[in-house]
Structures are given as C-alpha cells and as structure tokens.
Amino acid sequence: MTSSEAAVLGLVQGLTEFLPVSSSGHLVIMQHFLGFAEPPLTFDVSVHVGTLIAVIIAFYSDIVNLIKYPLQKTTVLIIISCIPTALIGFFFKPLFESAFASLWVTGVGLIITGLLLWSAEQFSFSFKRIPDMSWRDALIVGTVQGIAITPGISRSGSTIAGGLFLGLEREAAARYSFLLSIPAVLGASLLEFKDAIAETALKGLNSLEIFPMLLGTLIAAAVGFLAVKAVVGLTKRGKLSFFAYYCWALGFMVLIYNLLCYLGKVGPGV
Image (cartoon, rainbow, N blue to C red; front, side, top):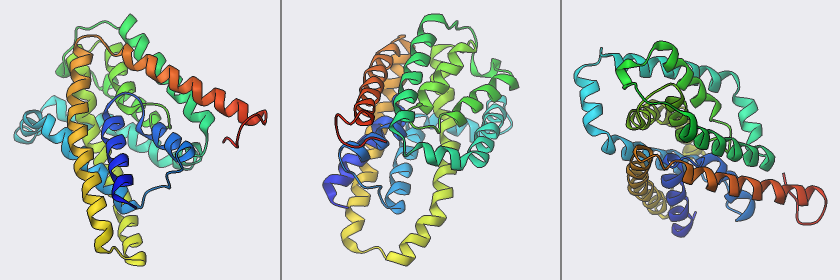
C-alpha cells in the first residue's frame, strides 16, 4: 500500500466512520469504482484505532466520568445496547459479509440512511436525557446499531436517529451514539486483531509498510475528531437532513449505475 492510498483511506475512514453517511458503504463504492483493493488487516485495525482515539478525545470528560463512577445508569445502558449489537454481528456475520459484495445493497442502504435522518428531523420529539432512557430504549438503539453493519446504513446516523425517535434531546442522542461507538469499534478491532497478527506472521511487515499505516491512522484520528465535533454541532442545530440529501443522491446514483450494468449499458456491476 502506498502512502497516498493510505492517506485517502485514512481520510475516508475518519470522515465516514462518524459522519452519518456509512463508512462501509463508501468502502464498497471506492473498491468498485476507484479500484482500491481491500486494505491489509493490519492497516484496517490501525485506522479503526485512529477513529477510536478520535472519539475518546472528543468525549474525554464523559469517559472519565464513566470510569470514576462505573455503576451509573449510563454505563448500564451502554452495556445493554451492546448485547443486541454483538448478537446480530455474531449470528448474521455471513449474511453481512455477502452484502459487502453488492452495490444493490449499498445503494438501498444509503437511501434507508437518508430516510432515517430526514424522518428523525421531521417527526422526532426531544425531552429525555441519557439517564432518562429505559432499558428498552437501550435495546432498541443497540439493535439499530447491529443492523447498521449492513453496507450503506450508517451506524452513527441510524443510532442518532433512533435516539431522536425515542425522545432523546438532540445533543444527548449524538452523545449516546458516539459513546456507544467506543465498545463497538473496540470490539470489531479486537476481533480483527487476531487475524491481523496471523496475516503479519505469514506475510511479514516491512519498514516500507509501517509509514503508510501510521499515516493512515493519524489522518483517521484527526479527521475523525473533526467529524465527531461537526456531527454533534449539526445534530444540536437540527441539520441532519443535510446528510440525508447526500445519502439519497449517492444511493440513487449507485442504483442507477448498477441497473445500467444489469442492462448491459456500462461495465459490470454487482
């Protein structure tokens, strides 16, 4: 992997991991249209660590508070939300992996993300803080996060929208979504870590690959931090619909392209 490829992938990962536009959907699109090969697992793990660092820095005071008082209700809610996410990921992993080969799934997923964001702006009601959430609320948000493994469906967008539909205040919905992303990203990284170690042991990791990996990680962390701050600010101001229009435009373009491929008008689609 070259430094320029690492920089681009780090930039895309940092932006799309937290902007409500689906990082997995953009990865599928980049691989298909730009010819980007799937990055090595070591690189994938490292950029996820970069985005993890970004959200930890952005919510440092919240995390310190959770560590100081681990038995508070917010901690329990996050744990409850993680349960359906983990179960969905475990039992439906083959289904989600097959979806990553489909532009149809990605296009439809992006349109669904847009609908969630737009509907949340139009029809949600805000009166709850995070401690006011029930365990049922936590289960619903966690289930939504699990479904968002589907390429095209944004994790941050769907969980923020879910929180808004459940009555969370705008800032609280964004905060809960990003706090919930910490165990989700950490868990995914740990699952990949074992395979990354095995891949490194098999192929080796030379000094020429270390710099691109570090570069991609730093860019993912820096851009991810800015993306988190931007999403929180836009959520507070009721501007999530901006991302809905983007998701709709991209989703329909992907579907139209794949339809033309199916009709034999352009190159092969998936």
